[in-house]
Length: 255
Picture 1 (cartoon, rainbow, N blue to C red):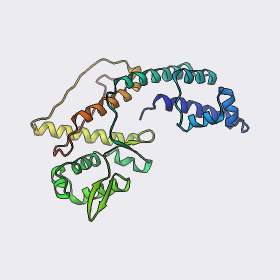
Picture 2: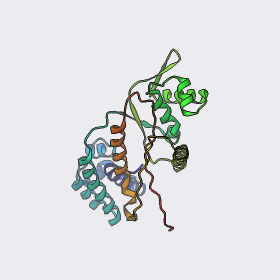
Picture 3: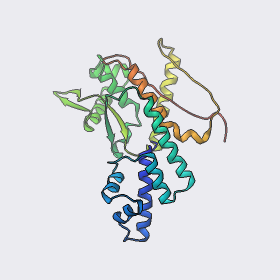
Picture 4: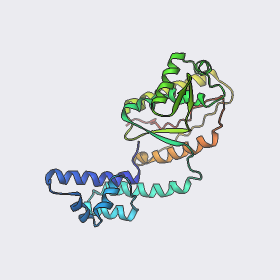
């Protein structure tokens, strides 16, 4: 998961503080705050993500920290991108976010969790129907439902599972690469299967473009915003049909 502009400046501040403190244990948070020209309480709130910084303030801090030009450029572009993305968003996400702990990241890496949850929201929400429609064993579906209950998405009553409220998942830190690879492979296999079956109503759109490789690390927020808005547009509560919306960016040329 790419860092946003607030996370970036927070990380730069934290890295500087711990680097200096490792050499000089007497370098306190209060001393760091004085160096930055803010109160220690304000700095504490910034480091705990309780207070947001403006672009001008963040760049002032960057100058005080003597950050390398490349890091200043990344920080500047992150703030500029955040501003443009905010203007693009026509609606707020009505779904509650659940932030997964590292030991729960396997849920993000397995599309079955999302398809089972989507089926539970549909009119075909019995254990047998979910198993049949997704081609899974009932024991596997039950195990997935139990995992979703454990993280607070579902609650179980009289042997049946109910959704507490509509939610979306995200990780709290960098997504483990091995789980990301697993999810991509699952998506490609599902896409290949759908193409072979040639089922009616399926849609695919593609574009092949030459790219500025220096901008590849900036596309995460743009894609995330697009997928969120597209999903909200397509969403139909109770629908029996479950589709995967997936955006893949991969090279055709060799390094």
